[in-house]
Image 1 (cartoon, rainbow, N blue to C red):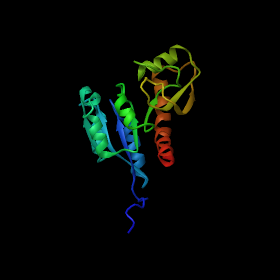
Image 2 (cartoon, one colour):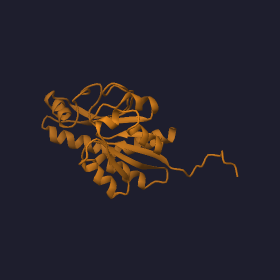
Image 3 (tube, helix red, strand yellow):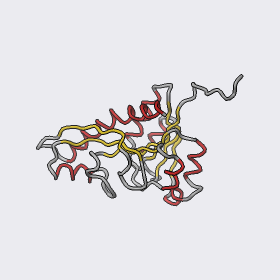
Image 4 (cartoon, rainbow, N blue to C red):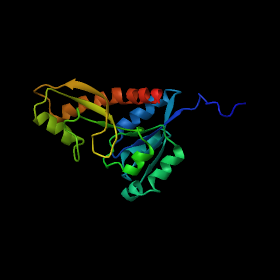
Length: 199
């Protein structure tokens, strides 16, 4: 038996970071539970009571919370990531700035989804309803999602793909958010799969 031969049956390993409700995380977990190709092995949240932890556990995925100190320290979250050795780290509604020492450890293996068409409506504080309100207030005729690699600056990493949806004059920040969520649910798992198949 050749022990050096790669085992093609081994699933790719995904780790998700999320801060809140976790509908995107749940959608990604369910998507890959229908495949033999990859799986979500761990969900991490910076909020102890985040709904995402409950969603992950209900789908039999390990889920833990952590403090800001554990995220930024050299032997905190990084140690947990080394243990599971992820092929891809996915930020799905994760609101803290990602530490440079983790980015350095996993180059081109950390992606984020932003609920607007970057470089517009990005940067610190631009998340959730704040983004959709800004889009509607500026009377944009379209919005969408940007899936991009993470670097040391908010929302400035290389863009992998963008998907758009049209807006009308009657759209509110709530209806704008609903349209963007539909794009997220449709495209985020597909793009993750494409990235992993190329890696």
